Image (spheres, rainbow, N blue to C red):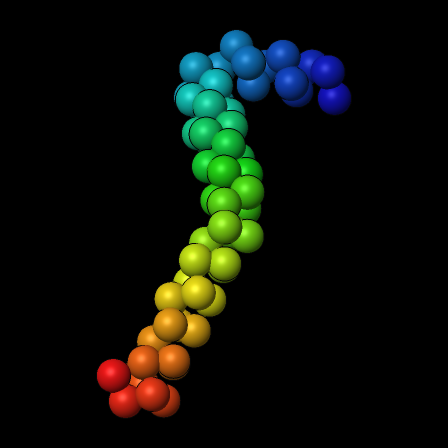
Length: 57
């Protein structure tokens, strides 16, 4: 297992692939961390729209 990891690090194409995986992981964590805030903002926006539609404004 260790030999496979070392060969991946030495292989430049594999190193680039690992960098892309790390970048995608960081982006995924950022997106997941922002979901609660986005959920609240979207919910508030639709609540406001619903209030305007039902009151006739």
